[in-house]
Length: 506
Ligand code: FES
Image (cartoon, protein in one colour):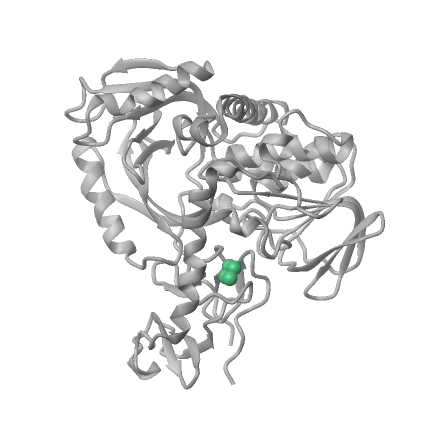
């Protein structure tokens, strides 16, 4: 019996990007085959198609319904891990290039939606960093110093439009932006198709192999696409077994949307200095209302299953700042892949000549994805790009060794869980809607009882590198804490790097 994932729904997830995309039913050839139809895959396909390349895009699910549909859509060139930390790890010149390239990504999105007449609610606005409640105003000093060193436009000012914070110090960064991510993807899809590109949904790629001067990707149904280059833009790369996955780690973030009377809050991207930080954004609604999005409460994927408490914390924080807030309309979560040196991996997959990857969004998935389009199209068509070395997936960053060790402890600890008892003594204790790990003899079983009372059992061993999966009761799926794979209750792989389903229990 097949059990679909019972995901929460983001503010834009119901928007249809391209429901008519077929499965890949025949072998194809292309200039470039792209795996993944989110912002990184579509931005790359768009740039290549506009420059005359023949592209094929494949996605294992519906078009545009992966992590891009779960973003909160901030378009910001300000480093998510802070510029002071980026300078410490990679130096001033790298941080300057980071800002320049991410600002170019925002500019590129603005230019594309203008050129292609994509109605995607794009707007420019300020970004505002403010001290976490109770923190001293001086907590902003390192970011002000870093911005000045890098010549990032910033204003050191006072006054937030939040209740009780009208005299609070904040840093105001101009020229940030926001948009509706799926309306933008739909516009890209239409342009890619007009240029002859083919888009295939519900097509799972199992292998990616270089073959002489070509690359061949093969699907679970045995269909093949032969191309001169391949781009793997699957959030976490499905083609790379180890190298990249030791240099990035999956984190889960939580978001909620509320109705807000139009004009009740000055429109900007707000975030505070807490770790993990809170963020607040506004998305235009219809009639007299907008949506206020609030998020934060992040944790490493699979290392906590307490979404209720995290939403309670967000709900306890935002109404005091924005008393005019009305009813909650949505709550959802998404996954980011944070790299050990705070910038994405965009370029040739380590060891390959024709296979490229885009991953490691580090909390900036939209700008990282648009940037992937700029960098990868240059690398594929010209063999060079001026920002490529900063994002080179093969780079080594000796100053990030402490982050490397702390992120890889997860995998080391995880394997010890195979020796531990199950969370329940028996599957008989499972209530409808509940999932838990149960020991049956020598094996650990990922067991789930659906709302009708039917029981679904799969091996608890992740099919990427064998880590022990954990139940995610909010999204009703199995999360792997090691590198971010997710599996539906019936074992189907939903998010990379895993491709194969959790094994059946005999
Ligand atoms: Fe790598 Fe599970 S995602 S072991």
